[in-house]
Image (cartoon, rainbow, N blue to C red; front, side, top):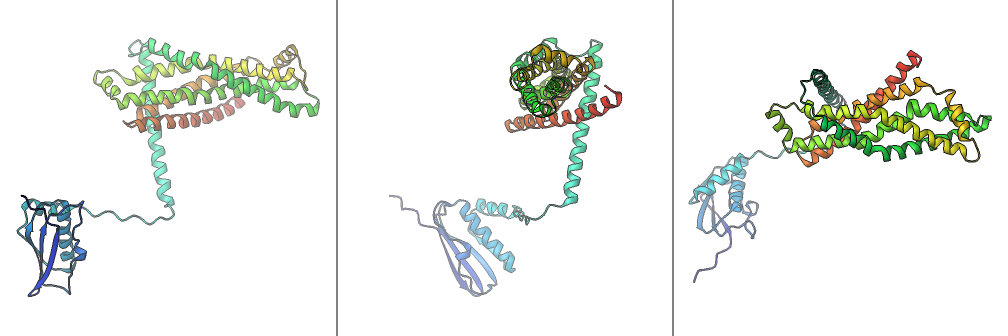
Length: 375
């Protein structure tokens, strides 16, 4: 019959200034075992002997005990010797000695202003370089496309036109119609105070064609299409499909980016006209109801007196530009995505934020430029 294993033990005795610790039994990290802090050490011995005495099976718990003894000896300048231990145990204890100590947790405090500003500046410069690099690659790709040398598939472009154009009609129409309703209702509260009820047609017509139509359309597509572009390209990067295209000599900009940007740039003006129409119909509906009671033919005739082709062209130019910016931001974030599921989600979020930022900046620039040109 096999004898049951004995419990781990560490018996310390002081012999002529040398602290002798006899270690034996079965050492398991899941079972109770001695700790070096529990070894009685009276004063400061001249040396420490760790002796294996009836040692059975062992694991990392014994290596941690030996390492704790060595650390105590290093702190108190006391030599520590091993006797009778397996070579593997001694090597494991030596590996524990090579492990770097854990870094101290910094004390929470106010952030360094100069460091934060510098980090933000470097990050902004890096983002600007990446954006400029992608714009340059798209420009060269457009040149190759006009020369018939680009690796551009019109089938992909038509598919993206359907996804970002036709499939967007319901949500774009609903948002535009409700924007027109809101503008007409809020505007009526003001114009009725001055007896200019019919002016509501002027306000809705100009606002929808010049600003609200293309702007609300761009915001909707930034969240719908821009995020989809980033998620698609990010997933392709995580699956190493983009790397495979580059290995085969296919330019990702020609094959993936340009069809999406061309589809958005081409469909945005048509969607803008659709959004303008639905927004004006929403305003016309509110104007026809009490207390305004403006007939649809009178609303349309009054709107024609102030809305001309320049207002419509202004909205179409903005819409095409917003489409390019949404496609550029979505593809940029998709190509920058990390190779993980979390990276794909972060890329989609960053694509929406970047698109909205570029849209607002571009709209502000167009407002100043069109005012200077007198449009």
